[in-house]
Image (cartoon, rainbow, N blue to C red; front, side, top):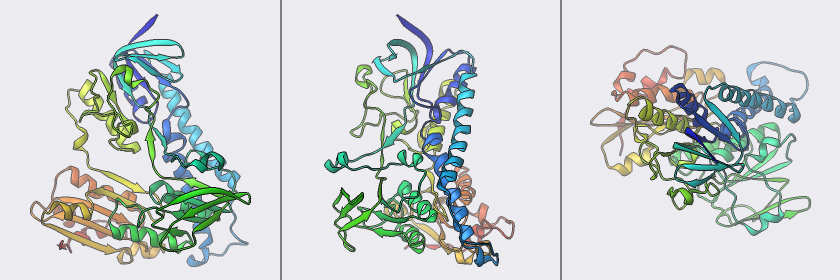
Amino acid sequence: MTRHFDAIIIGSGQAGPALAGRLTGAAMSVAFIEREHFGGTCVNDGCIPTKALVASAQAAFVARRHRDFGVTVGGPVGVDMHAVKARKDAIVAASAEGVAAWVKGMPRLTLFWGHARFTGPHSVAVNGEVLAAERIFINVGGRPFVPDWPALKDVPYLTNTGMMDVDFLPEHLVIVGGSYIGLEFAQMYRRFGAQVTVVEQGPRLIAREDEDVSEGVLDILAREGIEIRLNASCIGVARHDGGIAVSTDCAQGAPVILGSHVLLAIGRRPNTEDLGLDAAGIAVDARGFIQVDDQCRTNVPGVWALGDANGRGAFTHTSWNDYEIVAANLLDNDPRRVTDRIPAYALFIDPPLGRAGMSEREVRASGRPALIGKMPMTRVGRARERGETLGFMKVVVDAQTQAILGAALLGLNGDEIIHSLLDVMYAKAPYTVISRAMHIHPTVTELIPTLLQNLKALK
């Protein structure tokens, strides 16, 4: 027997609950399927818990710098990892419970717990029951990528998911992967008190960024005592005296790194291989991402893919934007598109990196005439007052249209300040809108007009 609904949503990550709210609000019956826990990666082992840990690590870092601010405290600063984890768990629980209450309170929604598999283009099996709908929305997210190194079957390792259960301080955490996830964990655990080594195959950290950004991030981490090993062309792991031996073929440094724990942070993969997509005829690419068009529609009419599984973003905010695009097109007669959005994201080390639009390297590759402005954070009065002067601000502008093409803000509050540029980019307004604005003193953002008033030709 098949149960029929107006719509089926698979997965409760960022896009799923909001879309369910819009569909049920439009008087549609919705089958909502979740196999593990409400909230997806962001709530359970991504943005929310990691930023809670980052906040604890920052508190420890600032406390240790008390003398820099003329403050005295009694005794050394300690970190209670059980309490750190308990705080993180409480924040996660509140968020997950909020999503659960929201979904369960929706009218015309039926919740199914279990793993969904397609049995046809518009039918899904879950727990032995078959559900059918003319509209199906796939929102299954992703998980950490684990390489097929033979030794991994005999060696305990951590991923960003496993790190959520850690309530102790690793003596020496070796992190394989020098990109966003790995670097956030590197700094936080160094600040908690662990020895940390980052091993990266490439010649520099966060290779998608400009070289000066990579160098700036490396400088920030190295100043805190994090060892960075680059050009690790061959990486292997093995047990060693109760710990882990990570072998590397690096241009510099010892060929073997002895650590107590190893964290694999080398990318993510979509949760699509066990969905029965073949039975529905849904196309995926070579990496398993579901192929979608500019409105998140798959090649099968009436089936959409949102969030990490479609390979069009891999951020919580892009997943949410996927939901907005689908809802706008389906319910509001508002033809929004994935390609309308401007790439924007952050690296949440301290100080953070805020990024929007094109990198300097991408602008150079485009061949267009451009202007560039760059300013060290030492020029920013607010940063000096806070004792946080590492990093820089950089903006690239189209020389002909005066449109802001991209920006990299590595420094105090860079993850927030980037939006003052991003919103002007969406408005398609010239950079002079900001350069002629009067900003509040003393703030970090007040230096953005000054930065834009001193643009030079990009050579």
